[in-house]
Each structure stands twice: as structure tokens, then as C-alpha cells.
Image 1 (cartoon, rainbow, N blue to C red):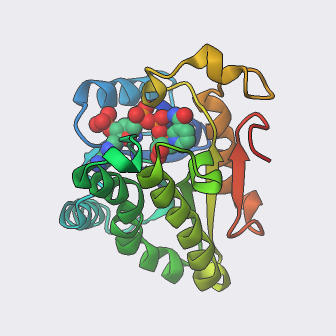
Image 2 (image 1 turned 45 degrees about the horizontal axis):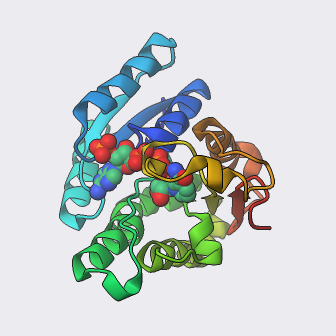
Length: 243
Ligand code: NAP
């Protein structure tokens, strides 16, 4: 059995990625933070589609101890296996102009979107390097490429994630591990609830928001064996909003 871990795999883009990886034959380990109902729904969708086994692994990606304990626990229960695909997807936003941004909102966004990369990747990278095969896909954002006003915290986290992607790719390329990032623009999920979709779509050359499945398709390519020579890249999925 081949295993893939998708952080924030229970809703939105992560759910679409979990379903896609399951369709590729992966046993998907679906991480989430608190919404048990959504996580169980994703699990049911995978099982109803007849894909191989999937499992839930609840932990807070912003908490290094929780990440290490959950991943060690998983490894102990699967002594002969390793996670060969990691999708660092979990994320939140807490938008505000810097002028009014609370310290807590700065730290929470940095911890959940950037420090999570360290917290989750660190316990998994060694087995990928030892087995000489691994795929890491980091969910960045248009905001991390361009910087969007009202998102200094989120832009800093996603920009940092892009830089970490490029650095780690060079560290592990020789061991046949790839590290890439996907940078979505506006994608229809709970995260964009409350945004004026009509007004924003008018500014997007494609004229609409993207779907989670359109992002998942790019993740699936980067997670596949065929993408062996794509390493340290950032692929935008934004309807030509920023090129
Ligand atoms: P979403 O619908 O809000 O789903 C977020 C997912 O992340 C949920 O599964 C949630 O779990 C999980 N999560 C949040 N905090 C977590 C934590 N501390 N520990 C573990 N899991 C946590 O978001 P989305 O739109 O699918 O976004 C997914 C990724 O794409 C994020 O990194 C986001 O920044 C990025 N992105 C999204 C867009 C967009 O337009 N939607 C654009 C660019 C980039 P619970 O259900 O338990 O809360």
C-alpha cells in the first residue's frame, strides 16, 4: 500500500486532493483540525467511490508536539510503510490591514500556514530520503507570489512557504524527492466565503473563481512519478489573474 498525507484534507481543496490521490491508488491519511463531520464526510466519499482504504488523523498542524506525536503514532502502527506523498495544504486566513492587525492574528496565520511546513515535513522527510522516493506539495497562494493588501500575515506565510519549497528541493533532489508548490488564486471553498465573488470574478481574466478539483489536478501531477524532474517549482492556478 502506498500512503499519502494531506493536511487539511477534510474540506475544500484538501478534500478534492484527498479524493484525487485516492483515485491514483493511494491510501490517504486525511488530517484535519476540529471539524469531525466534514472529515467523516470526506472519508465516506473516498470509501463510497470504491478507492483503497483511507484514514483520519486529527492534529493541529500549528502545534509541533501534536504533529510529531501523531506522525510517530501513525508510523508505529505502520512499521513496514512510509508516507511517500505529503501535501502541506492546511491553512487559514485572518485578514486585516497591518494597521489594525492583532498580534494573535499575525502569529496564528504564520503558525498555521508556515510553521506547519516544518512541523509536518520534519518528521516525514527522513524516510523519504532513506527510501529514495518522495513527493512534497506545498499549498501556497497568489498572495505569496504577489502580496495582497489586507493579507500581510498570509502573504508572509505563503511567500515563506515558497522560499522553503525552493530551498528544500535543492537539499533532497539527489535522493529523488521533489518539493513543489501550487499557488491558487481564488478558489470556491469555505475560505473565500464572504468575498464578493461577482466583483472579484470581473477582475479575473478567466471570469470566474477556480474549483478545488482544478487545483487538485495540478497537485496530482506534482505528486505523480511522472513529475520526477519538476522540482522546486511554483505552479499558479489562478485563471491568469497574475502571470
Ligand atoms: P478551507 O476550505 O477553509 O479548509 C481548510 C482545511 O484546513 C480544513 O480541512 C481544516 O480542518 C484544515 N485546517 C485548518 N487549520 C488547521 C490546523 N491548525 N491543523 C490542521 N488542519 C487545519 O480552505 P481551502 O480554501 O480549501 O484552503 C486550502 C489551502 O489552500 C490553504 O492552505 C489555503 O491557504 C490555500 N489557498 C486557498 C485559496 C482559496 O481561494 N480557497 C487560495 C489560495 C490558497 P477543519 O475542517 O478541521 O477546520
